[in-house]
Every structure is written in structure tokens, then in C-alpha cells.
Image (tube, rainbow, N blue to C red):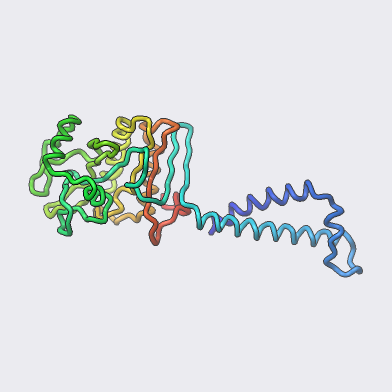
Length: 274
């Protein structure tokens, strides 16, 4: 609400200045709001006050409707452009799409703790592009992506550095979230930020002069060892991490952060959690 009032105040001042500049004084004088016993200047002042109030009300209503209906927000810097938008990541066209997996690139879909949930971005991807552990191994070899020397806590599996990606057509399959002995994803804030930093390096390597689309990474079932951040907090962390990174997608290509619209999250609240 404060943002709406601030924007409407700026817009109102601009519109009022314009109106009072182009509309002759005689127009305000011809509008009679007070009885004849009051002087003309007093009537004119009242008319001007009412015009200011009307402009402010209309400006506030217009901006409030704009904020309620908008589906994207763009942040621009001298060397980058970030678009935050509502939508379906997997339906985006003419771009590279980042799909978060886990450190072991588990490919099984199901409801067990160690399986990928069907309604997650990763689960939806695997429904359309079924894969096996052998496929992951082959892709890692092709990309010369070596597993880390120590094994995952989950079943002693091979694991990969968080933030590294495997390329599959227009998809960048990302190693994200460490696994505990039960196959549940977890990490801490420092690991999350390091993972994002590594991801920007990988994106810079593979984006191929096209736009790149990512989800709000970590907003699924990943558990944080500290307080679990909200989707709003994660979005702010992602944007800030990208702004601070020296690895960015070169213009005119853009980074798109594709969000799911849900309660407690709003494009209008971006930047409030930093």
C-alpha cells in the first residue's frame, strides 16, 4: 500500500503541474462552488483543491489496479535485465530452462521421501522426459562433469557440486540440494548462495545468446537448516545474488524468474525481504 501511495503521489504531482500549466486561470474562475458572497479568489482556490484531490484519487485507483493485474516486473542494470513473471516454466519458448534436481540427480517419481514429487518442476519435467541413472551418467561424461570425491549421505550415491548443470536440448538440469540418509533435500543459507553463484557461472557458459528461465529455486520441499525462507525471501535472494555476480547473461538476452502465483507471495513485494 505504501508503494501505491508513493507512486500515486509522484504521478499526481506531475499531472497537477501539467493541468495547472496548460489550463487557463479563467477556466477555474468560471466554476462556481461557493455562494456569491465569497470572493472569486476563494472560489478558485477551492476549485484547485478539488482538482488536486480528484487527480490523486484517480491516480491511486489506476496504480492500484495496475499493481493488482500485472503479471511481470523487470529490473534493469547497465549490463543485465531480469524479468520476474507469473507463468509455467516448462511452457516457455525460445529459451534455456533450468530444472533443479538434487545433488545425485535422482530420476524416480513418487511419494516416497527419496523420490521426486510429481507436481514439482523436476517431476513435471521427468514426466515429459523420462530418464534413468544411466542417462545421467552418460550426460555427465559428455559434459565432463566429474562427481565429487565423497559420496552422498543418501545410499552412498555419486553426488555433484551444487549449482552445476547437465545440458539436455533446451534444458539445464541443475544439481541442487544435498540429500540426507532418507533422501530428503536440505542445505543452509551459505550453501544456497554458493549454489546460486555456481549456477550463474554455468548459465554464462551454456545460455547460447538466448534468454534463460529459472523457477524460484528452493521453494519446493528443500529443508533449510536455519529458518525455512518463504518464496518471497528466496526470490529476493536470487535477484540480489544475480545482481552481485560478475557472470551475467549479456544483453539483449534476459534472465526470467518464473513464479507460481500463490498466497503470501506478490510481485509487488519484491525487495521487501532484504
